[in-house]
Length: 484
Image (cartoon, rainbow, N blue to C red; front, side):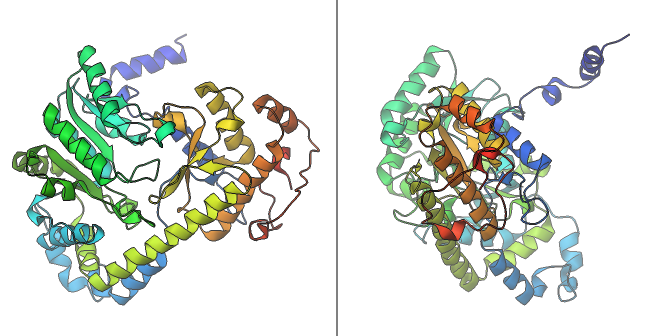
């Protein structure tokens, strides 16, 4: 009898190595958390004890504004009675340059998000299937298999898939630490570059994420200048992922690398490339709109050819060209989105602070960086994963462990806060608070597990200063650890 494993091996031998390898990164705890949610998704009424998705960086706080605009502008879509007159022109073949009005509108939106301090040339706008496609396209343009990009840690787990899987490119960590709030320093950049050289790894570029995912922090002007100086001195590329540029909700303001290269006369602009999308700033991940903006003419030309494999549909381009060209709406949206993000983030972090959970100070993004180091059984990544499993399986929250972001220190977790409604947010905060309150005074995870084994354990809260979040309507989870 042929074993199942042998049968699977034979099937894989019929397929390509690139299709059957582990390069996608699905084995990461980051994606395991998504699977846990998919198997038991929370719903306020249908499944109130399910897993709440806090591992998805999605902006759902301003869909009411978007829906209102769509209703008031029916001609923007070719799928409405008012817009059908443009159906044929939009539906027929379009080349990979994209609709001129779409590229102009995106360039103008990028300027508006950056406070009109810089200008963008629509002819340098190259489309792709989301930021995922944009990053891969740039990797194909800039590096050969085996070459590497430096990436400051912690960084978005999807970069391992986006830049490495099909290109054969490597990512080499620039280790950043909590002692200086994970700032990118000249020392860290030089040390990483030197270590790569010693390992005979060819560095072709530096990838930065500004605002940072998962930190929610911004790179200041001095740091950006140091980075541009560094890549010029090494004659390597700089890829700036700025997909969270419009999610800033507090000072200091966002500074784009485009501002820096305009100021630095000695900068070689051929080395500068920006990745942008509308997935985070507008909340349209399903539209798959990614942008490569390069200051290098050759890269623009070859990237445009490569974009044939991941174009944005002309129907989507047509709708977004109309929406992004409505400057009154865009100004209102950016301002309102910023206010709502700030309010939601503040509500979450203040609620955590009241039970002694700190977070890295941040002012951007759709998430914050939560510090649970004091709850670890041991200060190791195994200890971090042990705590994470309790949070997933007992507390029923999908928060993402720092190890999946290649964080250099165990005990940090990314928490997304903008992908849910207010009632779900209150339930999530109540679960975290109850979990922390219950574990106060317990020495470590072993003690927590012991508590979990007591089927009749009840929590008695000594104070209820956040009554808004403690609605008794739904028990937050089945686990006796946090049963209220």
